[in-house]
Image (spheres, rainbow, N blue to C red):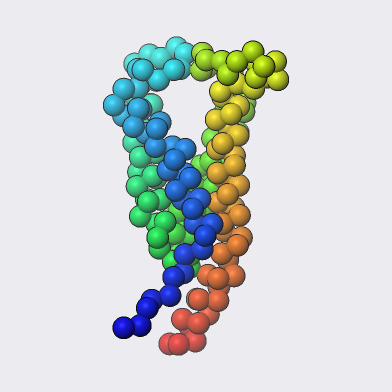
Length: 153
């Protein structure tokens, strides 16, 4: 029996990092949005949190399903670009947001203006950057496999 070659690049772990960053918000946002540590929650914001949580849960499910797929598949690449845009946008929004999480990371962190919003924004930025890196390190692999498939036909 001939073994199938693996076309998953080690950087595909970025799909799992997306899940690790966003699944807590998806779960809590769907089941207990009022218990999120955010300021000024009202009925409108709770509905939007639930809608956002549903969207995030969907992207987490798609990421889990795409993680093990080969890098050259257009659906995996499309999801990666979409998640890159999502994470970079979240990072930008969180960096520009006023304080809305009434928690502190301690006096030392506060003295360096390190807030939960900035930490969350930084994590989103890193994951967005990770998707951009994944795209760049796998683009040659995807092109080579597409060329080989075209040549075989």
